[in-house]
Length: 294
Ligand SMILES: [Zn+2]
Image 1 (cartoon, protein in one colour):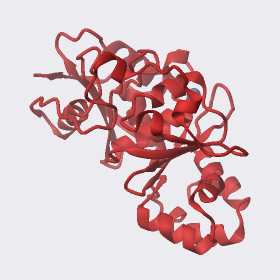
Image 2 (cartoon, protein in one colour):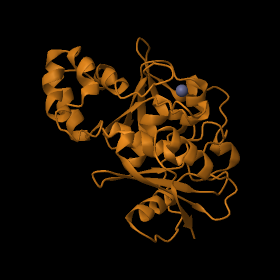
Image 3 (cartoon, helix red, strand yellow):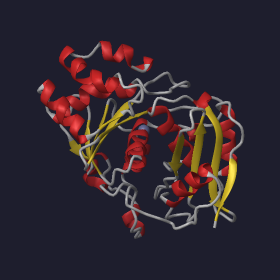
């Protein structure tokens, strides 16, 4: 079991511990549960879905990298496929506040990167901030997304975000988590191709400047991240953050990054390179290789 789970696991009910042990003891536990695994946990514990998601929240929060705030937030996104995805906040000392990832963004981008097509619900241990409410309104589940908070009845996002403004107000047809392919031709080595593939999946309807990041780890694994824009612009997730979030949730560490590639257009209206290089530098990595989308 990854050491970050030890303290939270020790506090769990013994039946849940027994049911979770096979998954958590897998050295490659991906911080998610398939629909089959969720069904197994429900049957083994006798909990309903909401109660199980609350019981699992401390494990999600244990994935936080809150080096600035020391305030761990956990989230669990529940996909339409039945799979559940952990999320946790990430902060980067030596960068700016804008580089921060909130737990809801973490769980949502995690689900998206793993191929989930839409979300039904999200469970969080603290009430979502305004930034995250706006971020969630970019999803193709829109205001119907169910929010589960401790001590409160489940409620739809529309109750947390009255007078909502979102992509539909701007007549944006492709929403976050919709299937998209920007069609840029893959070229170069495996890392470059992974960065281009990530850019092809990015959600960039406001800038028309798609981008993607791919990180090569010391064990040969490549972790990718796609850019995710927001109708209100500011809750936008940069591609590096999406990749680092997936890296962290997958149980890897920044120190394992050997190379990074950023794919963006030669003439983008928004430029990711400088912010990507600055954040990589802050976590002890070299500058990214720039891969042009054409
Ligand atoms: Zn937030």
